[in-house]
Length: 199
Image (cartoon, rainbow, N blue to C red; front, side):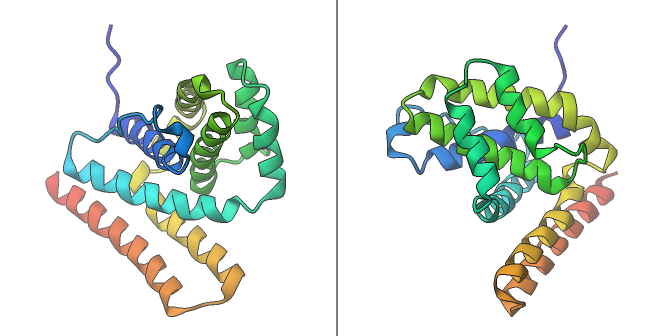
């Protein structure tokens, strides 16, 4: 019996693939590994994935300064032999059991960073495992939360808020930061409005 993916399933799958491919593109030794970037079946969902991938990248760049998380990522590269070792990193992101849009974004970003690290460590065979294991974790532990919280569309305002808070803590309020926040909120509102008109 074939499993039919919901839109939130598919957005999560394509988004994860996009985030990992984006980060692998920065590593010259990954050229033979670059997977074909997955796309969404319709233009609306493709715009959602593109915008979310950009937001995850910005959040991830800020998170990358977290020494403890980087140490965890570095430690897993030598232990990439099975899914349970890899899932320990995912559990680290959600260690207190609290799921948020930001933590899901961080998980996807971390998957990309680990993919980069295994390529640099000359273990490229693990890149597909990383994608598979992260997607399995997402579907088994996070997808129902995503659906219960309104789906990926509802992530825009929260992820925009996180970006603003991170930027604000680094450099104070500027008009550019305010515009990023407003842009995220407006994009989420427009997409929600268009979806509501279709029904």
